[in-house]
Image 1: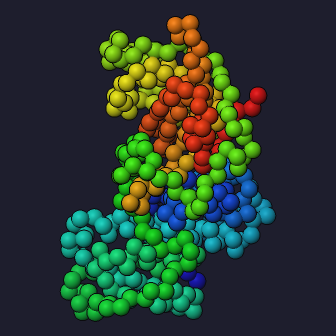
Image 2: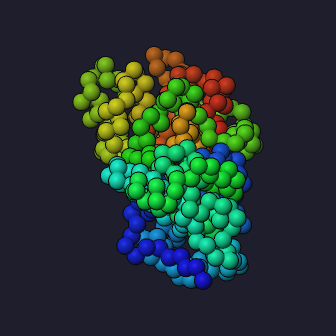
Length: 386
C-alpha cells in the first residue's frame, strides 16, 4: 500500500510553502480564482474557522515532525471524533503531496539544477490505483520551460502520487522528447505550479500598488467578490471619536522627531499588536521608512486603535496583474472624527497587512460612503458590535 509521511529530513521548502497557505471555510474557498485556491487551505465538512486553522497547523506539524498518516489521523480524531477516516486520508495525502511537490518544484528551478538538468519528465506511480490522468502523462519529457508544465505540475487530482524528475539533455534525448503531450485537463483546481514569489519576503513587495494598475494587483475571485451587503452590514460605517490628536507631520517636525513621537504612541518600535481575531501583527520602522510623507502620516497616531479595535476586518485575496502570484491581505477599516481648527473632520483610516506585517496604509479625509463601500470587499473576518 502506498505510504505517505513527512520527510524526517525536514523538507524546508515544502514546509515554508505550506505555512503560507491561508485557512478558509469551504464556501469561501469555492469563490476564489484558480490561482488563489493554490494559496488557500480548506477541508470539506469543517464549518468553524478556528478549527480549520487548527487543522492547517496539524499538517504543518506533520511536515515538520515527519508524521505518518496514522499518527496525524489519530491526533485529529482526538478532537474530531466524527471525522471520516477516508476523508482524513484524502486530506492528508493531498496536502502533504502538494507541499512536497511545491518544495520539489523550488529545488528543480534552482539555477544550478536548471543548468545541468534542463529537461523534466512526468513520473507517475503505475499500479492498479493509477488514474487515467496520470497514466496518460507518465514518461512525458519536455524542456523545463515548456508551457505544458504550467498546467500539468503534480498533483493533478486528489490522492495524486506523481512527481517530476529532472533530466540531463542526454537523458532526455535517450528517453525521447515528447512531441505531442496529452491535452487532457487535470481535475479542477490542480495542475498549477507554485510561483517563485510564494517563498518571498514577508513584505510582499508591490502589494501596496493600486488595484488594476499595470504591475499592480487585482481581486482574486471567480466572479463577483462578497462585500458588505453579503454579510448584512450597514452601507455606512459609523464615525468614532479619534483616541488622540493626530501627530505632527514629517514636514513640521522632521523625520527623526516624527519617528520618536510615533514610537511613544505605539509603545516602541517595532510594535507588536493583536487584533480582535487574536492575530498578532507587527509594525516596524522599515516599512514606515518607505512611506511617502504627504501629511497623512499624522494619522498613524491611531494605528494601535485601528488594529486592536477596528470597525471591520477583511481578508482580501489579491493576484498580481498579468502574473500568478497571490497574496491574502488583512484590511482594517475605521472611520474617525477629530477636531482641527474648530472644525469636525472625518477620516477613513485603512491599514493593510500581509502575513501579520504592515505593508500599507491610507487615510482618506472624507466621509464619502461610496469610497468606504469600495474598500469593504473580501471575506469579513470581524465586525465591531455596538
